[in-house]
Structures are given as C-alpha cells and as structure tokens.
Length: 357
Image (cartoon, rainbow, N blue to C red; front, side, top):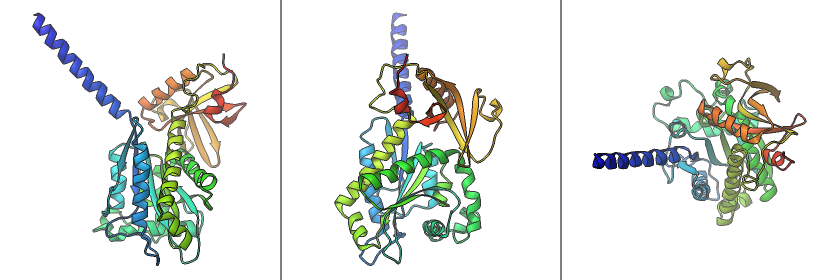
C-alpha cells in the first residue's frame, strides 16, 4: 500500500510538472516575424544590385535574435532562409500558431529618388500612392500555382477587391496602429529617418492574419544612399533595433505596466479610471453581455471613426488586472488595460506614477 501511494504521488508530481511546463509554454507571447518575398520572388530590386528579399530577411533575423532573449516571448519565422512562401502560407503560419502579433518587414522602391520609412496597418487605401504600394506587395500572388483558386477571385490590380479586406482586421486595428506608431516614432526620433507616415492600405497578408498586424517598408533600395544604408551592417542593426524596441514597448503596454514600475507598491488610484479594452471596430454593437461572450459591465466609446469597447471600470489596479485575465479567458487574447484621468486617455505608466491610497 505504501508503495502504491509512493508511486501515485510520484505520478502526480510528474503530471503536475508536465502541466506547469505546458502552461508556461502556452502562456508565452507569440510573435510571428515575416521577411517579405524570398526564393523565386526577389521582391523589389535596384540597379545597385540590391534585392528586397535579402535585406528584409537580414533585418527579420536580427529582430528575432533579440526577441528570443526574452523568456516570455516565442518567436516564429515565416522563413529563415531564401525560400518562397505564399501569402496564404505566411498568414496560415501566424493563425495556426495563434500568434499575438504579426510583423511583416519589406523594402520599398520607386522610379524617383524617393526615400524614407513608413509603416502600414490594414485599411482601405486612402490615396493612389497607398494603393500602389499594396498592389506591388500583393502581386506576388501571380507567382503561385492555382492562385485563382486559393485567392477566390481576389485581383491585386482592382481597388474594388480591397473593399472587403478590412472587416476581419477591424477588431485589431487599434492595437496594430499602436505598434505601428511605436515603430515609426523609433525610425523618426531615434534613427532620424525621413518619416513617410503611418498609413493604411489593403495588404492581403495583413487581411488574413487574425491578430494585431503591421507591415513595415524600411526604406527605398532604389535610392542610392538609403539603399546603401539598408544594405549595410550598421543600417540593418539600427533598423532591427528600432523595430525590436517598439515590439517590446507594445508588449509592455499590453501587460498594463512597464518594467520600470511593475513592482511598485500601489493599489487604488482615486484620480484614475482603469478599463480593459477588448475590441475596436467600425461596427456599433449594443453593450449587452451576449455580444461580448458573456462579459458584463461593457462600455463603448466612439473615437476617430472606430467604436472602442471596454470591460470594467475601476480605480483599483489589482482589480483591473484580474478583469483583464477574465477577458483573456473569455477569448479576448489581445485585450489590454487603458487608463483615463478626468476622462482623458493617459498611459498606464503615467497613471501608476500618480498618488495611490
């Protein structure tokens, strides 16, 4: 009997260890890094002998190397060498991994001396220039076998084909825009690159990823000086570092508190209203529990053409962290904490620096 108890206890410990290991692995923040083009698809190229696929891959590998140093982050690559990956294949990799973030890295080209960096989120092209950028990236579809079947009549050359692309990404637009802003700010203020803006356009690969997603055009390889910079060790290191730091800042914001204040001994902040943002969409929904997977205490705000939906409202930071976990359990995996002071949105970091009880 004692032997049976001993083995039963041992088996329980083994099972518990496996469960904890599995839980720890599943609780990691999953980031899919996508190096544009590859293999038979060189992407954009220049008379200076530069190919987009090579520079994009080098930058992606550098970003991934830094992210892999974080124990709570899991990095998945759509490609780690010079191979051709379909657009649907790239989206499928991210979706099957149930990723928390999708970052696609590219280089730009033009028949002028244009230069500068720009970051895209999914949306209807605001102008012809944005449409043309998306069109060029989407045209890789024509290199795939049976593309007419796999892309269900989608035509990269038709603006009308892009109209339906925004619907599935609406819920993630706010978070995608936040990451894109961090990336652009790092390019502008830290690296002093020319700012070509945070933009929206109809990229197929962004449309088919079901998580916050951005596409980065790091610069123009057709510009002699910028192409030389992007192809240099210094340029690749600086660009990758700017992207890496933006991702870490974004992730820190989702956790509701940065490294600098996460251990602060604070609890209730009378001047602050904490909420959990669970979705953002162009669709106006009634704030009823049946629309939000059973969650109650839902509020709605209309900002810049988007309806933002929040769960909970409290000045207790510990309580809002619990509500965030409840929202995640219900399926809102990309939800995050926001803070308001006198009705105005402020960063969570700033909120936690105010006086608490």
